[in-house]
Image (cartoon, rainbow, N blue to C red; front, side):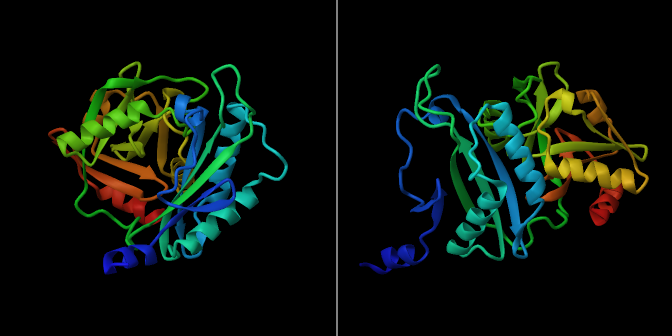
Length: 285
C-alpha cells in the first residue's frame, strides 16, 4: 500500500444508513429508490458543538412533523432519541467531536409513483468537520444577488426542508457563477422568500422584518429562536410580505441558519448595507 492510499485509509469517513455504518464511497440506493426518482423525503441539518447537537429538540420536532405531512409510517422504535444517539455515534466514529455539520436525510424506499413497497422511513446520517470559528461574526459581510428564474410556491410543503430542492439548487448555481456568497430566492409573487441556505431578515429604522411563513420560506429553527429572542428583549420584529424594493431600501440585512447562526450582508447587487443593529442582535443571540 502506497503512503497516499494508507493516509486516505487512516482518514476514511463514514455515513449511517438505516442503523449501519458504511464508508463514504459505498453505494446503498437502488435504481428504484423513490428518494432518487421523486425526491420523496426530507432532511435536517444540525450543528454539533461542545458535545451536543444544537437545538436538537426543535430539529427533530420539525423532522417528525415533516414525516407526518409526507405520510410516512413511523414505527415506535424510530424515535428522536434513537436518531440522536445514532448521529452522536457517527460523529464519534468520524472523529468530528470538536464541531461538525450533520445531515439527516429521510426518504421512502423503492417503488413507483403509485405503488411504493412501503411507507417506512429510510435514513441516511452524514457528518462533516466544521471549522471551530463557524458561527462567529463574519466581519467582511456577505455578497448576495437575487435569483428570479425559478420561484418557490406556498403549499403544505413550503415550510419543510424537503428533498424537492430545485429552486435552491438553481439559485446556488447562479450564485457560484456570479461569485455571490448566497442568492435570494423569490416566491411566485416575486416577493422575497429566503436564500439558498438561510432565512433572511432586514432592519429599517430600528424595526426588524422577515418574510412570514405564508410567503413560502423554510420554517427555520434559528429563525424561530431569533424572533422569540428579539421579542423577549423588546425589539420590534414583524413577519410580513417583503418586496424586492423594500429589502433594497433596508438599513441592514442579515441571514440566519443552524450552522452559522447570524451573518450580516454587506451588499445585494450594488446596494451596500450597515451592520450596527445586526451586531447588537448577534451579541444578544
